[in-house]
Image (cartoon, one colour):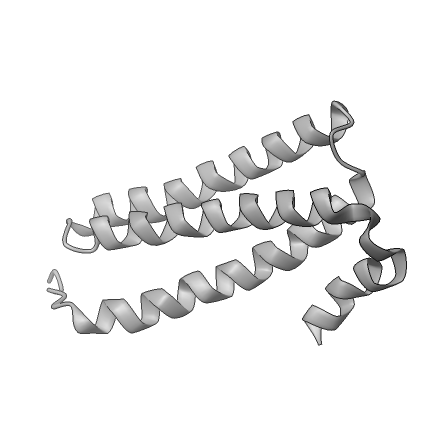
Length: 115
């Protein structure tokens, strides 16, 4: 359902916005790869370090994506509405894939609980 809502602008506007589609997809994929990497490298660290890397990294990644998006829009490299709609669609999809990856990877690792 979300995919259909997100693809509606592309289907109705045609192929005039390929650059917006590719740009938003690339930004979102890079964000998901960095997030997955941060979780994988921090899983064996103590809890405070794990939370700093995962949640601090999430905050930093959102700030970078937002800042880069503002830059792209303000410099007129992309059309704002299609770019933001595609970015929201891909960001949501890649966050889902990233978290699904965590759920598959983390149970396979031995986690020690601190008492």
